[in-house]
Length: 354
Image (cartoon, rainbow, N blue to C red):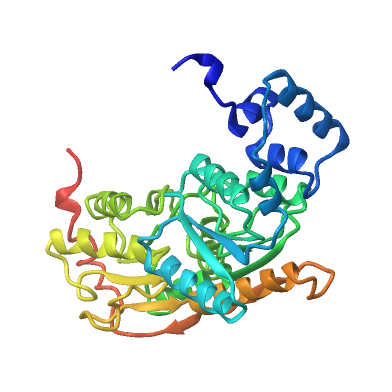
C-alpha cells in the first residue's frame, strides 16, 4: 500500500508530541483539561503530521458512556476477583458497566490500559496500582480524571483511597505467634515497592520490637507477590542453618507457596511449623489444618471504592478526599502451636547448604 494512503493515528501524534494518547484526544476533541501550552504543541504536531480526527468519534466522546475502568494487578488472585465483584455490583446499581483489566504487576501494561480506556471514554477508574506503578495516577489527577485507589496507596498522591489496616493486621498475627512462644518467626513478604508490603512488614517489626524479639535479616524473605517466589523463599528458610519455628505469609498467594514448600519437605502444620497468613486463603477453612489468618473485606473494599467513584462522577460526595481504612478480621484456627523445645527446633539443620 502506498504511504500516501496511510492514515495517521492518534498514537503517532502522541509519540511525536511526547504526550499520552488520551491527552491528544482531549486536546483535539476539546473535552477535559489540557494546559494551553500542551494543547498548542499537540495541535501543531497534528497539523505537521496531517492528522485528521474522526469527527463522528469526536462527537461520541462528548457523550456520557456510563462506563468505568477497574485496573487490578492480578486477576488470578481471589482477593482481587472479589474486589472486582464488589465494584461491578455497585456499578450495576447505577447502570454503569465495568471494564476489568489485569496488569500482571507491570506498570507499563497499567499505563497502556489506562490510556486505552480513556480513549474508550470511561468516566473514571478504580485502580489497585501495580508493583512500581502509580506514577500514572498523578497524570490522571493533573488531567482531572476521576479515580479511586483501592487496596494499595501511592506516596504523596492526594486521592480517595479504600484499603485495609495492614500494619495492625500484621502486628496481630505476629504478636499471636510471639504469645505462643515463637521467637524465630520468618516472614514471606511481597514486593517492597508496594505500600501493602511495607505496611505489613512494619506491623511484623512492631510486634517483634515490643516483645524485645530481635529482627533477624535471614528470616525476612520475599520480593514479589507470586506463588513461585514464595515457594522458593520458603525453601530457603527451611533449609537454612537456623530455620524459623513459625512463618508469616504476607498474602493468600504467598501462603499457598509456603504450604507447598512445607508439604514437599514433609513438614506438618502445626506440628513441625506454625503458619499464619494475611488474607484468607480461598480454601483455608476447608483444608486441614485450618489456617489462622487476618481476613480482609475485598468485596466491601470494591463496593466502597465504586460508590465513592460514582459519587465523584455525579458531582456528589464530600469536597475533601476520603481515606477509608477497613479493619481486617483476626481468625484463629488450627495452624499454630507453641514451638518445640530447644532440642527439637533445628530439625532441618542437617539440610543446610554445604
